[in-house]
Length: 246
Length: 307
Image 1 (cartoon, each protein chain N blue to C red):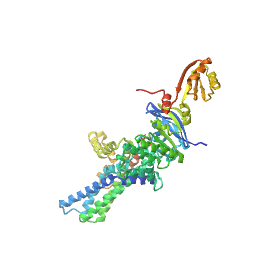
Image 2: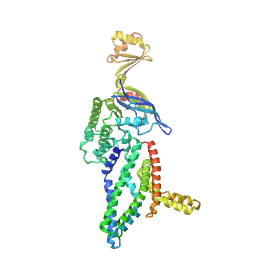
Image 3: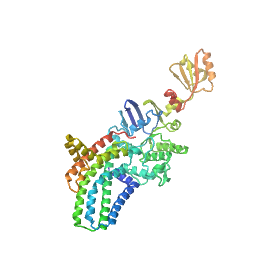
Image 4: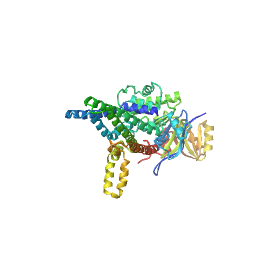
């Protein structure tokens, strides 16, 4: 597995995609800070910027798509999986290798992006209150977001491995993560008899705990996130085990 | 003692109600260059894909280096190299980067493995050129480099000379022969270019509509394809004895149904027929026969199919 991860990380490192992705995200953060600074509001502090960071953590559910795609690399489109299975690499190693590599890349990129954000906050804005307290708050929110991101990662990877192409996998993922909550809410309103069930299902969605931030319900977030990760990984790995590789 | 490298037992593949490979039994021994001959859609690629785990058989089994269990087969596959259909690589990586990726993934040790593999197929000067800009011939060479990188004991090559220029075909043939001679690499090769196959293979498997029609060695094929005079007579044993006694011809075979295949005396057909007729043997036909691999294959599957 170590060799497999080594190879996956080597491949990602040699993709222009990685640098492009980082440039877009860091450029976006820089633009945000520049706008706030140019706006001339003298009351904005580091604490405010960290609060905004906590509120923006749901973006991680969407950024996962780019990171996972970076690792999976359109295997079915380029037919590269045949080079792996022909050599006798167990399919489970391939599945879990790519999942782990994507998780490692997510963590690395998350650290780089968060560090850049924090650095800009400290350089450009005054401290409003107790910095360590603000950092602790953001740390807790990250701790709540982490399992949900992992759940999203597991779901997207399962879709990539089971569906025909990356585009269809991405569409389904965005429907689940971006629209399913609205659909359930609407159903709950239109169909009163199903309202309770819709409410229960809403609680199981990956995006729901983000709506509760900065109120923290860490056990619930871990339960939901690990639940999605486990179920989607089991289904994805099972389907991939039986899949024809062209 | 001969060692079986690949054995398939009743290997079968069905897609829905269509059977594309039907109870195929192939045996390939160490050091063989096995030519798999068949038309498009005959099942050649599917057999190879089942052997290299790209597709799961509907029935039967594959044995590689004596291994048949799932885990053991996985380990055995680390001793193979394969190039199935068009070689596929990451388009945004160079030839070196693509090979380095697979070298790391397979845990192949050695600092010069990638360079050596590229050198073997004459791809050392591709530099920073990405795979997506490669010609078909270059892609084929890179596919071969990947297949050879782990110095395999068994090499699966499916239509490997597609896209190669004439010079590339000669280099490729020499490379395979050298691998086979120097390292006893066993090779299973499928190709439409039968003349090319004939210059390489030491044994053949003929497949049509998913059925393995015949397996034979290159010597057996040469024997069957030899130039000969085929005589159809009413009394074959008597005719054979006469030819031996009167004309000194000994290299012949008597076939069932009154036919004799004569492998010498091809330059004196008139003399032979005169002798037989003079001795009261009824002669129904005389035919000069000879075949190459292509003729033999077409004959085996019942001639050229149209439409």
